[in-house]
Length: 173
Picture 1 (cartoon, rainbow, N blue to C red):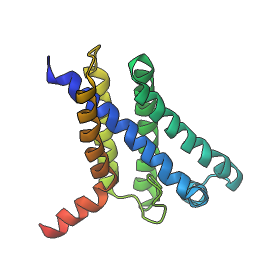
Picture 2: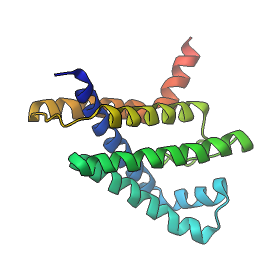
Picture 3: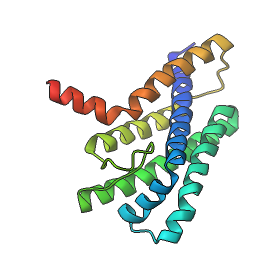
Picture 4: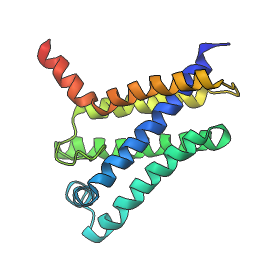
């Protein structure tokens, strides 16, 4: 068996875990997330109050769809790709135009977005695209799926802390 379908399986779990963490992070700081939508993105306060829980629900729903696997999982991955592209484009635009914008990607509404955050999102978008291109009808056993999930979880932790890891590496160089 080719390694490509297994890599796609790891990326599938990674994407689901990342979306679940993003939803949980925003849910923990929902009021701050709504305030950030109003402050950083210029949304009216009432719209931000409605949009904040809707975005949390969308991320959680996409995570669940992806974890379901099969055709539903592929639809969830396509939805995740669309969400990451749209959010990254919006945040990237605001970052370039305003120089400082807060994203609340994982609940950290106090830290401004950095180029590292945009790089991370670009890598995630590329990964999701690769997953959609590489995934096939390969069926994995329980052991292979657990290993794929464990590898994905490690990657998820790295992705969440990507900004801090990159800054630490930059300082040590």
